[in-house]
Image (tube, rainbow, N blue to C red; front, top):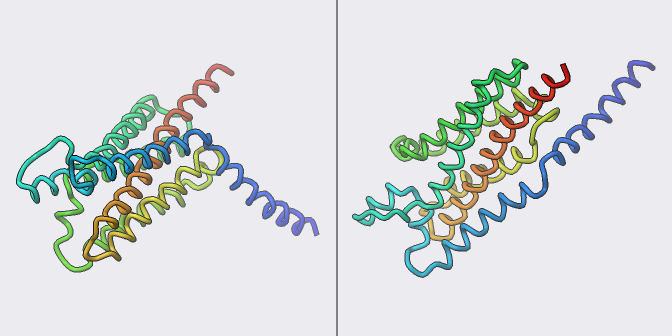
Length: 229
């Protein structure tokens, strides 16, 4: 009977822990990320000077297709890269300060590696050069999905206990939608490109915010622990 009571209590607490984790992220942060994406895409669609898709696709791809260059090409794509690089800088700074908990150090190292890989992929168009055969784009998308899923599973306890699970949910929703549209809509249309890259920006901003907040919360917790001593 005692064992059944413990099991029931644990099962009851698990959903509550998940709900608490999902509510840990400030509402204003989620609203700010959503607003940034909505405003960026609204500007892209309503501006009268350029083809909207030229502002969301990778700058090098647009420049090659147009035969010229413009700092506006790939503006939305570049926003995601900038956000990831800022998040990588925050994670790197936190790692250099040597957090006390080993699991926190590992989470920061994983998140830094994933962030830099995705940022370099976008910057150097590795996903474009890798798409040399049928199904290669799907394989690459699956590899990213597995990497992020492995991260979430590997550090699930730490994420639920201390970090922003809601941001990871938004990240998976955004990047998942982007990948699905990219794979299923062929040939791409203007609408599909806008949806794909808007969802991708949402996912990258959410991931960048997760990494940056993980670094900040780690440093804040370590400082509070040091002050208590």
